[in-house]
Image (cartoon, rainbow, N blue to C red):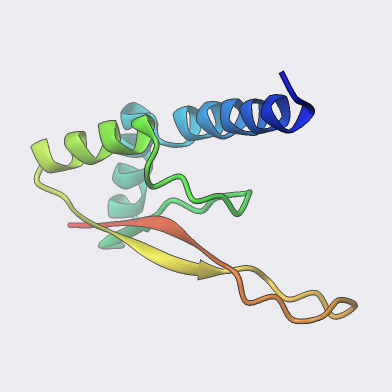
Length: 100
């Protein structure tokens, strides 16, 4: 196995674990309940790392749960924060926004 292959697999495994942690239906349900108790009608799953996790199995599982609970959701583009000391980066990644 080439180094690039093993690095790809390591990155994919890390993203998969992160998505599984981030998109647990029970955790999301608790966060939605807390947001609703504060009067909000939306909850955005804010990611710590700028990965596109929308195509992971964990995201699809959460989407199925959201559908079964009749929540509305959309993957909104999120821009990377600009660093004053580096050139402009025009990269985006999607984050999940849930509404009720």
